[in-house]
Length: 538
Ligand code: AMP
Ligand code: MG
Image 1 (cartoon, rainbow, N blue to C red):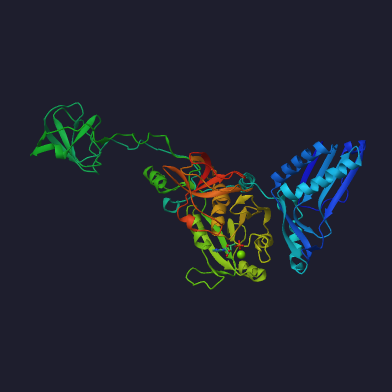
Image 2: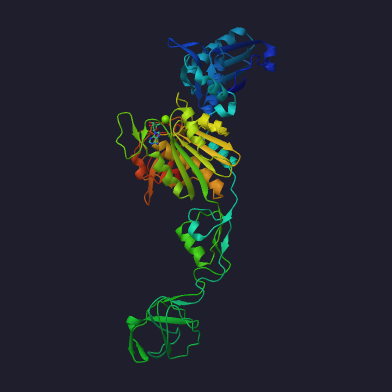
């Protein structure tokens, strides 16, 4: 049987063309429209959600299974997702068969099966007395892409392709921590530049087996006094001192007896006690490669090489708005129903490794009042790079993040990702400015930052792309199969990955230990200890 399945965010067309095979028999069409009432309440629309890829697969399999009993020629199924106003079709089914009775039987069984096994569901009914929602929600259903739920890979790929690296700048080392190096810096000379003593002691020719030596000079760490030592000669050296010539060894002063300008070696160590010229790195070798994020160690190496104004990513300008009238500052004792703000400090901490200038404000839950507050920020091009809004990313009555981003001129790339925790995740682009609406729950917040915001930050700064690694589960991961991909907080140590306990995206205790997110495939369920899994270091 020829099968065509579509999920769409736009109204199903009035007229659907029948497949050519329909010419060989009957063509039966069915449209299921949304009624104006749900559970006794008047509604103006229903919202449908779906796991898109899986739903298409399941519909196809269902049709194939039923057609074994009721052979038909072709079937075409279109399911609308997102907001479907009452009176409009949520589903269209067209069936071509040799005999009409077969098509009717197939349709009946298909509609029953659809309710049971296919991951498309009514997310909510919109009561008739909330007309204020209509314009935004209707607009939302207009584009099929925007209504669709993104897969994790799809969302990361879209962020990657829509964010462009910002132009690089030269910055002093004191301002370069956390920025991305945008040029490969090579060693201008051997490091160390000369042989240096690693002990306080006496230097002599390495092949000089004499027991007694004349001390011909004294070298401190800052001295540079080249001379060729002869057999029987030694120089007193301090740790770090540049040695006067090559092919020496240093005997620790503890193993030497000194009388005036004479010494006697009591014992020679196996080690030469010398850092040899170029033993750390040779002239011309790359020291730090372009794309590396500069941490303390890399900055120290650049300083050693005299690279004091490296070419780096610019300091990012980030604006963060928190939302929710139930949110109170952490200093305040919450009344029943109130919640202390943890996302502001969480975001500040997560952004720290990316070298950002951060401005923050808490927005009132009244959209008009929120817009007025937002207007006090300068959100023009070139004044900021990234806008983050915590909370209100879903489609509740008071959730305005999406509308706020659209009001600010952001084109919404997607607004849901098929991951757990953290499904409502809005990604918007306005020129070279990027915006994210993040779910307010702390664990979702953390996961969405690590998966999506950090991906954008790496791209904006020209850093190496974020990638999943592979590791071994130290203990069993207990989970019921879930239709969404799960990012499971974990602690990674020498024994492997330890999944941490969490029950809801509102949980926060696991964040104290989490340094990795294990990627659990959709519908996988528990995973045994010792299994190799994908994970994202955080
Ligand atoms: P929302 O995404 O706005 O629906 O919020 C989801 C949950 O996250 C709610 O229980 C909020 O109270 C909580 N939440 C939102 N913002 C914050 C915040 N800044 N700090 C802690 N929890 C928050
Ligand atoms: Mg909220």
